[in-house]
Image 1 (cartoon, rainbow, N blue to C red):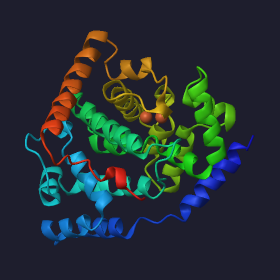
Image 2 (image 1 turned 120 degrees about the horizontal axis):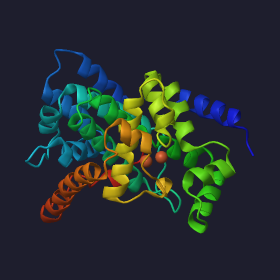
Image 3 (image 1 turned 90 degrees about the vertical axis):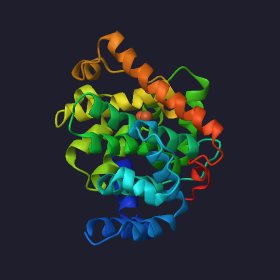
Length: 297
Ligand SMILES: [Fe+2]
Ligand SMILES: [Fe+2]
């Protein structure tokens, strides 16, 4: 087995070489400039098809609660606001820089659907439960499984063995990762977050998203991101790499969701929002998530 230390070194040195794509750098620069206007910003974002698709998908998420369909980037900027846009551009570009094309082992589309659903659900939960960390909950939710993306790309053989174990046995993904690699996608994601100089409490929330009760820096944030993840699995279907995921009881208790009726109430209301969106997508021709599937990283 490769030593966890070696994996950490590789993850952190490989990622050191990955710069933010030019479009993302430009967008972040523009967002920091008070003179930037919406149409100039929209023009730059529109140059990147994958980024455009993701921004529109997030803006159209029912959890943002905007009743009308958002089909242009300009409109999305107005609805989301500059701060949220900046979070979206940075986090989607960070994962995008690691991303592999879909293959039999890694499904890019499923990965993004899960990332976006977890991000918007963690954000929504933070708001609904009165926590003031909704922006960080969103970023953490979006990034929490990025370790999977790294493993599938840089540890292809081991990843293949992990997926094989998950498909053929009762072990869940994390157990299979421990068997094959001795580390999990959660730890790997945390190392990356560290390399990207994300705040300590976000690093912690990513690396403990399957064990949020161990968080010490910001246990609330870790609990929100964990619950966003599990809600996303329950509502949208479980991604292969989250097979067997269960709610952590301490996290539920921390958010006062340990009362089953209350938890189910939240789940039902979020689930009906998603159903409404799916119905709307089925009716409308120009589904905003088209294009995500063509993403080339
Ligand atoms: Fe995970
Ligand atoms: Fe997940």
